Length: 195
Image (cartoon, rainbow, N blue to C red; front, top):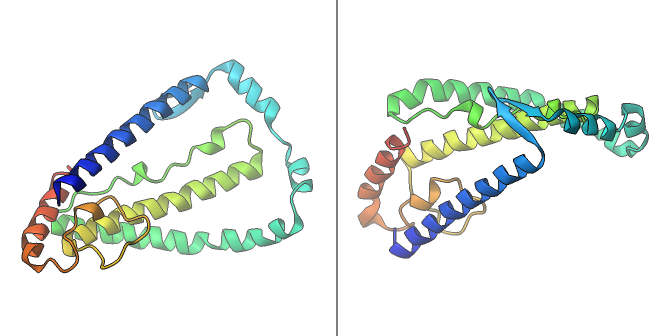
């Protein structure tokens, strides 16, 4: 990878750290903290949240009928998401130790915590559980797939792709046959360094 690309990647990492600092400030502004992995709001904030909740019947009355009718289509996806989760987890458990790739922590990707927000009604909480799970499964799967690609075929594509995974920037350039073997070894070593 060129020095300019490495400099840009370092700048991206610095910006991501700055984003985390800003998010931490927002957490303080909304007056909550994490205790043993659980969110705890100040009592006053929790009371305010309860007052902001839109009751379920009122919420449903304001919902367009087509949105209600589309709900079974959305929720039917839970079956393929659960199957994907199961198969990816099995693949991950069997193959990653064989390849020497560090395991992906599932809990780093699947967060189901928004149902504890007092300003959400029951249906909104259910929706948040569903979205947290499904988007988490996608993130978990993406990281496992990204590490797999980094292990087996760390070659960039011939043309730009939208939203590549975090490992992609370290891949060997498309058509660079001279650097492929060294790039493959470097990519595999980079995976081991994740531990």
